[in-house]
Image (cartoon, rainbow, N blue to C red; front, side, top):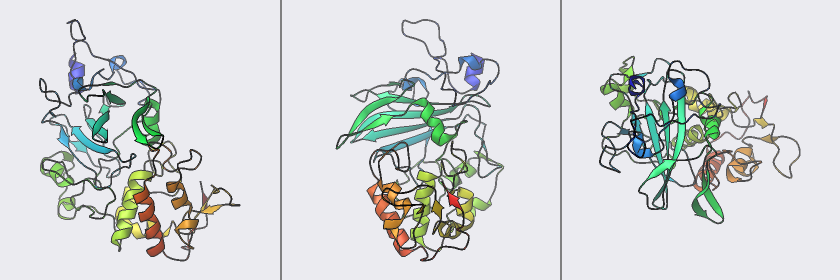
Amino acid sequence: MTALWRRGLRPVAPAGGAAPVAVLLLLAQAIGAGSTGEGDAAIRAPERLVETGLYREGHPGEIHPANRPFSPQYPLWTDGAAKRRWIHLPPGTPIDAADPAAWEFPVGTRLWKEFSFGGRKVETRMLWRASDTRWVAVSYVWNADGTEATLAPEEGVPGAADLGNGKSHTIPARSDCAACHGSSPRPLGFTALQLSDDRDPHALHAEPLTPGMLTLAALMREGLLTPARSGPASHPPRIRTASPRTRAALGYLLANCGSCHARPGLIAGVEPFFREEDLLRDGDAVARALVGRLTAWAAPQREGHTLLVDPSGPEASALVFRMRSRRPSSQMPPLGTVVRDQAAVDAIAEWIRTELPPQPAPIQARRVP
């Protein structure tokens, strides 16, 4: 029992008033694989969302004050879903930010993300660091009345929300989590750049900061990051570019492509790369490197290889084609969306048309998948 409290999840009593037990659910092998020591066989997620600690006890629907809201400045597109997010950090255990590109979260950290479509709550995902080597990633599906959310089955829930035009939102299978979060899952939208107080006013689908939301400055001020640094407070991180349009375009690509086209996704190492550290150092160089780059993917009705960003314009560019497509064989991102993000397609096309150089950069000699 004490070990469970250390992990930040309290025991719950099953129906019928039996003695408290941990409500358990083992994830797919791809999620948090490996032994994690004494008591790890008992690491499972509660059957009901109210038992995860998200809400204030005895007040259904009221977020517990220990769980802090946050909003990444470059949100991930999920078929137009409205989202709310919270994080719980165990008291006295700050995030280890010694490696700016890979924050280490303390055992007991929990993050939740709520998805709503058409004003109706559909699912809430939870990412929980249950031990030194195990992250638990699960989803909870809301009932039609929005009064209770229960653990989604391991294989996910197809047709969880009607999106119109014969399309629907699917709550993902637990094994799908590894495709974006990696074989050892970690938060993706909780980083120095995403929480920067220097918010991008042109960010696509930007969500306004509301009172009480955690930002990088708040994390530092409250001693929730270690080692403490003064630099980011006076110079908050931002994508380094000469153009506001390039800044917004790269931010969108980072959020929607970077989980795979960087580490730690299952196809980590596949170019082009959209890595936060590269964008903070020289976003313009990252943008230039896209132009004229050959890909190993061929567009329908075109012979040979296709240029990621064609100097002739966006209509000939694989980047725009694959963002526009929702065919399983060609769409990007490949998971998590069935509806085209038309606003992003238009913005990226206009960015290519007006901001990127008309000729390939000198380093574009390699083919990439």
